[in-house]
Length: 54
Image (tube, rainbow, N blue to C red; front, side):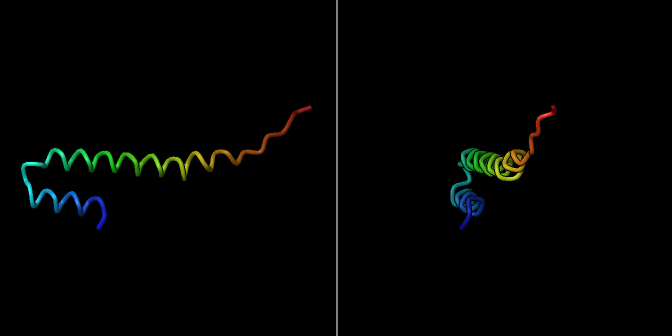
């Protein structure tokens, strides 16, 4: 069961905790977004070849 399923199940069991579950999903999505940026953008940008102009 992934994080989204856990939050949905928690909401269905305790509808009063919707804001708590929403915050967990926001944090989880933020972490996934940062991992994507690190793995796909920053890691690839370090493959530059530097040469000296003489």
